[in-house]
Length: 315
Ligand code: UDP
Ligand code: MG
Image (cartoon, rainbow, N blue to C red; front, side, top):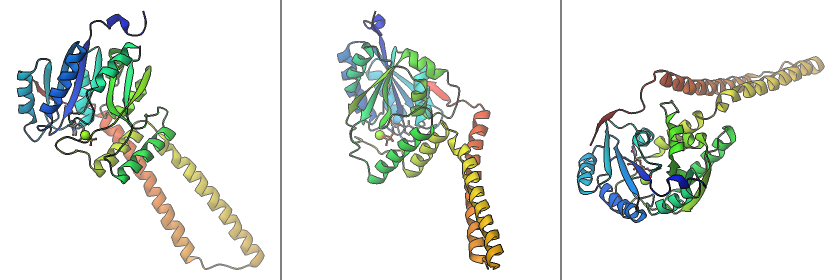
């Protein structure tokens, strides 16, 4: 028996769709996805996770559930963020394969067919990689690139570049994910951390059909910090080396002052250089403390052991 062929004949597909203010996209998304899923001809469930939307998303989703079979609507008690909403959906999913996908149709559901065929070839993870970032601004492109570079340099698991949450995972992978207890979940990193045999396929990211993106610059910055600090302690350890380097330079500088005084006997007035050194080192120390604070904050949040999300109800 090769790969996943044992359950190839008869399996359940789970789509996990986090929704925040998606009243305008939900219907179009459902229509297109259902078409694709019907064509594949297997059992399926579409799990919508309403992440505390401020618009009518929940009502729209409930109506969709009445008009289509195979829809589950999970309502979170407030907005917990996309990572938490996705976690909720993945944990509740029953499928042999689980596919997180955005509600705004930026992830083409048509790719699901190819996902499934790769899974049948024996891959446990099928990643969809954006070939172009046509619709994104230059700063966003540059910062995304910088993030992936830095991330892969300083942590032991590489997050594949330009791969989002849109992917297929086999039941094995989902079970592994469910074992990770942390409640601050940087999903892209966790997906990469669990490993398994994976393959990447390319796709073109579409324009957001309706509504607006919930991720602005500040949110993305914090998201990037999450990505770095959840998977690497390098930012903590680097201070030892910075400190050692500065101490060495200070020592050499001290030697040169002593020598200079012995040889030339001049006592230099050094107000400007003193100020510079004091301010520079003060700044460096504050940054170091800031980084410590960042990690300490994470330890604090994790130590509370609060759940990642709270479900208000399932409809
Ligand atoms: N989303 C969510 N909770 C949030 C923000 C976003 O569930 O707090 C969902 C949103 O409904 C969409 C997906 O996450 O299905 C991606 O969001 P968006 O399109 O705003 O992000 P972008 O495509 O710009 O990265
Ligand atoms: Mg989007």
